[in-house]
Length: 213
Image 1 (cartoon, rainbow, N blue to C red):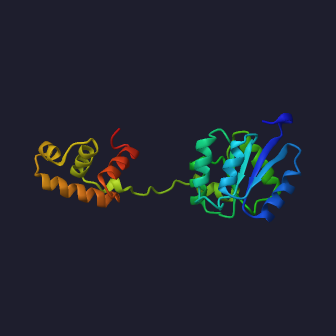
Image 2: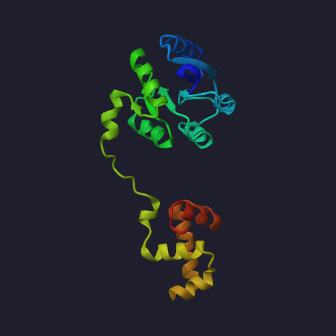
Image 3: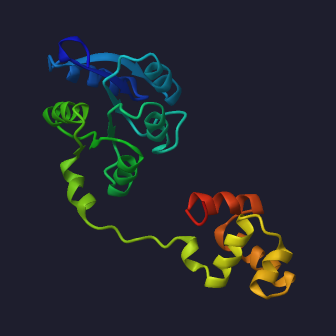
């Protein structure tokens, strides 16, 4: 934290009028200081690289990023930096994705000045803060979306594991006591079910989803 325990905030929003309004909000609290402004994803990353930021106040719709992509990039580069999303999207699904990507808080732009200031203090201190209008929906259990892997038969899984471990079609066929052209058919089916274009894509997919180490 900066000298005097003031929270140094980087305002990231591509609308000049919004940034102007947020500057006035920051001036209302002696414990908060404006450390910079950014109007694009590139500007956000460049300013953060210079250091001296305690809290990123971030709009989701920024030029140069897609949805929660910028949050993920910021979180990878600065894992300890608190991020508070301030957006027009009052959608619990988007809020959930933002929080899972690394945001510490999520607010909609119709929130009161008092709640925004409180949220900045809470998130800067390492606590989470969610817009009251969304908190109930986020607590509710979400239905699980079936993964493509769920559709695989036991034999298809066997073939997938064998292939991503580097076994040839012939060796895989021998291990499973089937003909090589049968394994080739399974391979084609796997690529289709999992939406992968090549064997190397299958390998990356399997590793990413914990099918093989």
